Length: 179
Figure 1 (spheres, one colour):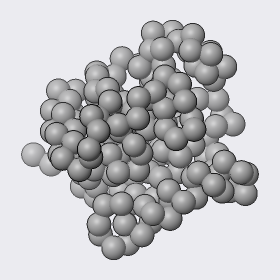
Figure 2 (figure 1 turned 180 degrees about the vertical axis):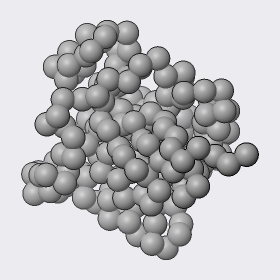
Figure 3 (figure 1 turned 135 degrees about the vertical axis):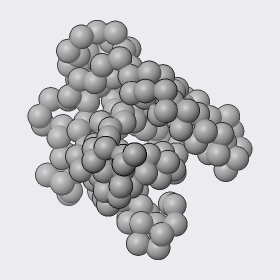
């Protein structure tokens, strides 16, 4: 049986501006949408998520063509573009909204995520803090968060945090190696 021409997974690895920009570089990824998931509040806003009122994390929904890029490859890149051992944050972005999280749409994704965690744990010294859970609901972020890096490449955060991550990822994609 042929895989469907589009699949999706929801990942959170810190600020969704970074994660969105990184996965947009991956061949076979059709769309990356920043949003919120992993909490209980319906239709959360950025302000509510940042104030820790919802339990949601900043995440991205990645829609991809599994004939061009496998879920396993996306998960491999996920583990390498952020620090999965830092609890509740990435770098100076601190708080539960920046936690590392994989939200799966089905049992096959759950199994792939758990297998990828075992492999990722072999490459790091500290315990991985990444949460793996079923996706309950994905809420798209406000429009001004979409394509943030592409629209504001000279903004300080984009220059000093996102751009270096993207250069590392671009090099890895060209060389065929993981970052």
